[in-house]
Image (cartoon, rainbow, N blue to C red; front, side):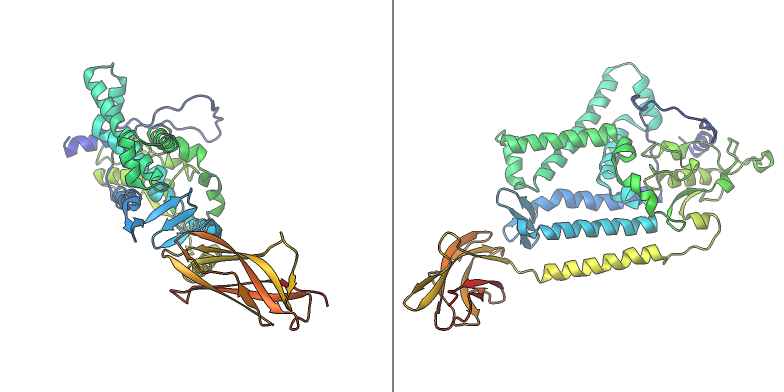
Length: 477
């Protein structure tokens, strides 16, 4: 198609039907929505989406295959209760870090939303990225929007079957790779792939691979905009975080109205028309099938594709660009824009403080967990040969990535001594429970309840040390 025919197509699109503002629209919630045919478009925001999504996809796919210290770089080993993330191994007791990370992610999302709207949805959300891959498969196998509409309207033929089959094959392949990769975060991916393709995969892993294959296939292949419109909670509460200075996709109604088709070079202003030629390209490229000209809507994911579409039409019509653009409500109303406003500063300060504390806590985290419990299965204390003794259960968990031998010493207000402890080598992730006896001369004790401190030190690395305070019980007199 030459440039002249493209211009003709842009200027002769069927106008979108306008719904009066005061008209009541009845929606049947049980009626399936019409299929959305996305138009292929090029432009700055489309390229930006690809540049952002490509590293995210590669990181997701390659991370389970990356090996650090002879183990997967990221493996959530649920049976062993170990979570390997890069150079650190976490245990279930480290769940506070997960909660902390989720809170930080929430505040980061709030901060970004206040500043630049729903760019998370438009550029980095997995639903958006995977839908983009599925749309690419449609374009590859069935052609652009008009070709897909004609293909669906045709009767079944060999050509139609082959095109549809090729698209479905690519969809299933993407879904299967996604599922195997995701399950590979919970079981070694190399063994998983070999077991899957040799039909030796256990039923549990097979169930989850098939489950996530179906979920990916359904969400990205068929549900698409329904996920963003009705299932995603972010669309429901994002409106309360917007203010007049939040960047979002806006249609300049003052410049664009009144809409109407016209020929290139025609004096449309004499006809009372605005710059919008009512070609509906902004609707045809929208992944969630909304009309941005109706104003800011909860379904809008700020992907910017309508900007690329509108700019391409404005360029063909020799009109100024920016009829649809990323701007703020105040900027659109030609008011002063405030970047550093109280809400942004508040979210930013809290976010920076939480990130700093999280990094500090993680950097100073001790790869050793110690629990000391006084044995309640025996009498509270024993007196033998002028000594008073208490029995304790010592639980040591090695959270380091190396085998260690831990020495134990006791201290307090008196000359405590430990008996019955033999330092065994404790493997990575291993938990060892040992009974120990603490004794002190009866003549030294001056109270019934006394404080005793257990100090556990890694023999190979004295910097790995944990102290635990507990109670030593003695006779009342």
